[in-house]
Each structure stands twice: as structure tokens, then as C-alpha cells.
Amino acid sequence: MQRRDSIGNTILVALVLCVVCSLAVSAAAVVLRPIQAKNKQLDQQRNILDATGLAMGEYGKPASQLSAEKVAELYEWISEKLVNLEDGSYNTEIDPETYDPREVVDDKARSVEVVAEDYNPGIGRREKVAKVFFVKRPGEDRIRQIVLPVYGKGLWSTMYGYLAMKSDLETIQGLTFYEHGETPGLGGEVDNPRWKQQWEGKLLFNDSGQPAAKVSKGPAPPGNPYSVDGLSGATITSNGVTNLINYWAGDDGYGPFMKKLRTELNEAPAGEETAGVSTSTGPQPTLEG
Image (tube, rainbow, N blue to C red):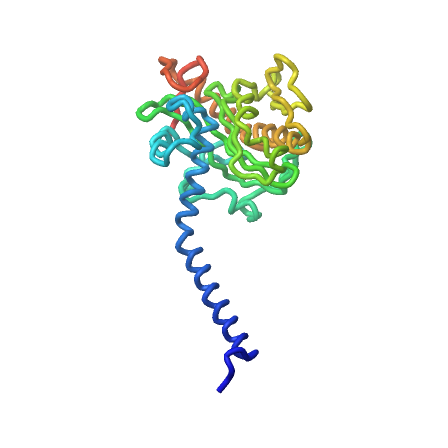
């Protein structure tokens, strides 16, 4: 009979424990995957709502402090469409609910190489088709804001976020990042609510129609309509934010879509402004399709 403390028994017990633990971890990963996906979706919804200011406007607190039920209620204001970035047209061939732009970036048939001379977001490729989000009070046709997914390199990571624009398509409503690996206390300050608040009301384009939003090196010049304060000790992250915003606002990003949408909004009949989040006071915009 083999001794309990023999080498053979020790190895056998270790193997059995490894197999049992592996099965337990694998089972937990499979069981928890739907919950993880749901939490990830909830986090993105909260970031979209925070970029729009809807949570603060309706409840006086950021979406991160709202229950999942209230987030779902507010998210009824949000609808999404797909747009072809090359010409800005709507893409109706793909289901936006199942389309994940991040999955197609490495597919050369569904993505393009990023060549940016003025503002390099530090990414090799970007998708041809992107999601855009429209903010409208349920039951209304008037667009209050649009939200554009944006991403680009910081110091340590690719930063993924949302840029919300007021309905004049010139004024920034908010900017949030829902995923990044920047240094806490330095580049990670892109998550600081006080820093993010500076973006509200800044202009995205200059008088020539060129993207001009900027994170300054140090404090933003007083009265500058395009700049916010730099992130202390995080110059590369600050430059990354400037580059990614202006790249996605330009002709290689959402520029063609925004030009088309601006034309649609300007041709729409004027209407009554509705109380709620901050919007432009221009003509009443509507969304086709």
C-alpha cells in the first residue's frame, strides 16, 4: 500500500486540486460572463449620460451615483445609429445593437489605416462604420445633443470615451472616458469631475471651421473658448486628449457626418425650445429616418 505522504500521492493530490480549481474558475467565468457584459454596458451608459449632463440635469447627481433602474430610465433619451465615416451617410445595413466597432478595427476589410498629419491619435487603424448617439426627450423629434465615441493613445493606454455636442454641433456639452490605463493622480485625472466640467461650453471648431479644442500646457488662457487646463504632470496624456478630440472631429473622423447633420438641422423647421439640459437656441433640429 502506498504511503499517504509519498511523492506519488503528493503529486496526485496537487493534480486533483489543480483540475478542481480550474473547473471552478472556468465555470465561474462562464456563469459570470453575462453579468460582466451587463455591468460593462451599464458603465458605458452611465458615461454617455454623464457626457450629456442628463443625470445632473434630471437628478442633480452624476449617473455613477444613480441606480441601474434610473440609468435605464434616463437612457430612454438615447438612440443610436451607425454612420459611414468616409461620407457621413447613415448605414442601415448593419444592426447597431449587435455592431461592436472595436471588434472590426483589426479587420482590414472593415477598417482603414489612420494617417493623421495635424492630430495623430496614436492608433493604427479605425473602423469604417461608427456608432453615434442622439439625445432626444422621449416623444420628441428635436435633437438636443449628439454623442460621439472617441479614442486615442495617452501615455500608457488607449483612452476610450464619449464627446457630447450641443445641437449647434459647435459647442461641447461634455467629455468622459470609460476605459483607460493612465497613471492614477496624473493622467488618470481625465476622470476627475472638476477637470471634466471645464469642457462644457468650450467650442470644438475655430472660425475657419477647423477642430481647435485643446488641453493647455498648464492653466488655460483666461477667456479662451477652446482650451481647458492641462493635467498636471501628464503632458503626454494631455496631448493625447487634444489629438483624439480633434482627430475625431476632423475630416478623417466624424467631420463628414457632422457636416451632413448640420445641413439637416439647418433645413429643419424652427420650433419651441423645451426645458431640460443645456442646448443651443438655434432652429429646431429633427432627425430623419
